[in-house]
Length: 95
Image (cartoon, rainbow, N blue to C red; front, side, top):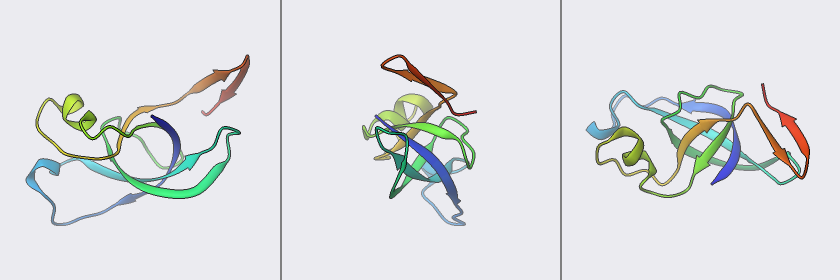
């Protein structure tokens, strides 16, 4: 799993039936110091994230199917929106 910030969304008028009604979001990964890395990716969103949210991205290809309860293939899945986290006693707020 990796931390990232949602920076945009993907609009697709035609897509696989398994993705009907589901969002695809563009994220920028966050490094260990809390900075954006400039490395962007497109993620399947099961956490109802929005632009500007800090999110937890699962990099296991089977995560989307587990969350939706049906067979869906997606390499990257946003599985949570982060409010805050604590690392070595230092708490970072994201909302």
